[in-house]
Amino acid sequence: MEHTRAVAYIRVSTDKQAERGISLDAQRAKVDAYARLYDLDLVDVIVDAGASAKTLERPGLTRALAMLEHGQADALVVVKLDRLTRSVRDLGHLLDRYFAVGRWALMSVSENIDTRSAAGRLVLNVLASVAQWEREATGERTRAALALKRQRGEYTGGRPPYGWRLAADGSTLEPYPPEQEVIADAHNARDRGLSLRKVALHLDRLGHRTRDGGFFSVSSVHRLIARAA
Image 1 (tube, one colour):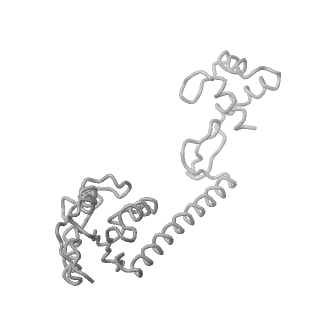
Image 2 (cartoon, one colour; image 1 turned 30 degrees about the horizontal axis):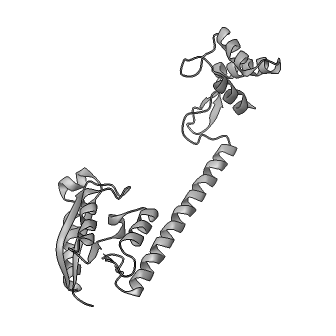
Image 3 (cartoon, one colour; image 1 turned 90 degrees about the horizontal axis):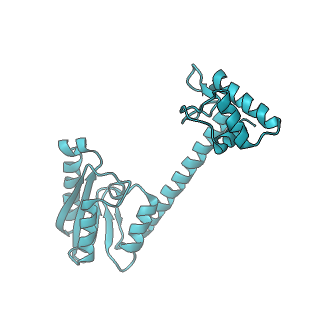
């Protein structure tokens, strides 16, 4: 392959790692060795220290990509794809904008990816597809587990609904008598034909308050009755 100018991008995700140099030196060593092995002209090594991969808006990454756009480098080198991004969507954006055929190259040391070749582009697309599948499968498993817990009356996190509280076992919900009384009074008033507004006024006259200590509104009464139905 022809001589290629490359900019390396390395990242650590926490300030503690950045302060101690954890993995930064290791990433730099791997990048240097990779450049020597494949005869790359390493024009710069750009670091994002203590930067999360949740977004592409990182100073170092922005500068590295700008070097490609300004003709200062022909390829971007990372030790591992997750140093670049952990998001399949963001990876797709980078591939479309920067690393499509005929544009700049993306090289990953650990995954042995080099998009200058058709094989490298194939491996990268397969990895992206697998990552997308894994994320969707994990989401499906999580939703199924939460649905099963709800069916069993187990606590699934967040604030328990009005009328319920977390039981002593820390995993199930149990009726909370003071709030259950409010729900019963609301239902009785509604059964007598009162409008939602009048039910709210009725609860106020009885001295009932929301969990936050406020007055019941029409919308809060509606949620209260609908949830308990």
